[in-house]
Image 1 (cartoon, rainbow, N blue to C red):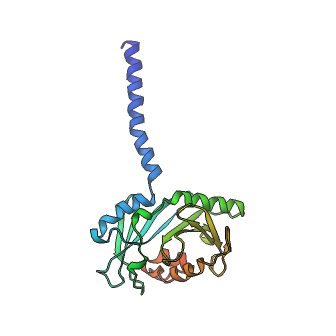
Image 2 (cartoon, rainbow, N blue to C red; image 1 turned 90 degrees about the horizontal axis):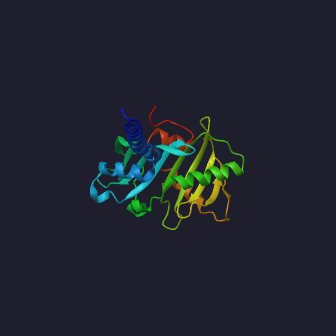
Image 3 (cartoon, rainbow, N blue to C red; image 1 turned 45 degrees about the horizontal axis):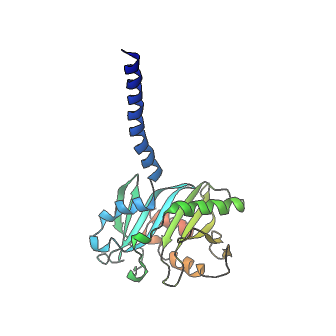
Length: 227
């Protein structure tokens, strides 16, 4: 083969490899993104409720969420909530969120308000580094707790399966608002002295049964729902 033809063949092969590799890398980078998870989850519910999200809750590593539980408002079920579990970029489970709580349409939010979890996880990492909190996994919750309360990510820091605490990150500007220990009894303000998180902890403890064992454990430290 002529040397020029050989070089062209090698170049074409590398170009083809790069063309295949780049989309795969891009997919890996977006895998677990909350916006992508929502787009997958929405097909599990009727069109009229796809814009009414009660909460999104993720489990993963400090830098990336690996699976998402998304609860949609659905008046067709007794609790008015339908949970959809998304992992590996597909729906793996959907079921009525039956936890003894009736969800309110007033506390739903439009999916366009779902901010990317990446900046919130980064903000939590920064806070943890500053306060010498070493952790190996996270939980991430986004929900409306009250019409008068800030819209925030609640990032749980976990090491070896033990809860270290929660970093509250403002969803609008990704700044750290406060930190709370695992019990949620006390809140250490990071940027102000407001007590807006008190209602948050009271509200979320009433929702854990609707999602199942993972979320029950996240809120209470115990796991009884799926045993």
